[in-house]
Length: 108
Image (cartoon, rainbow, N blue to C red; front, side, top):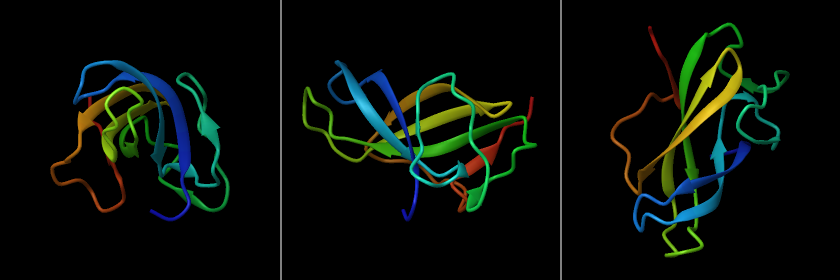
């Protein structure tokens, strides 16, 4: 994955259903191992992935292991709107096709 950022958050594990703390690795904004929480604003600077002028993006993330069941490499979607980390959605251990950039622009 190269350099990345982390979103530290609690989420229900998609495999066991138990609430767990995850560090979701993602590549958007300045990719410099910044540690974020939901509600934080994305930091921009070199090197960056994405564009700060995009109003809403869905970013690919990966985390694990789940402290409850041990599941690893869990896929997440990270919703960013107006450069703020708004929501995280656990998906499971497989992801359907995603954009090569690691994010997609959402249209209203």
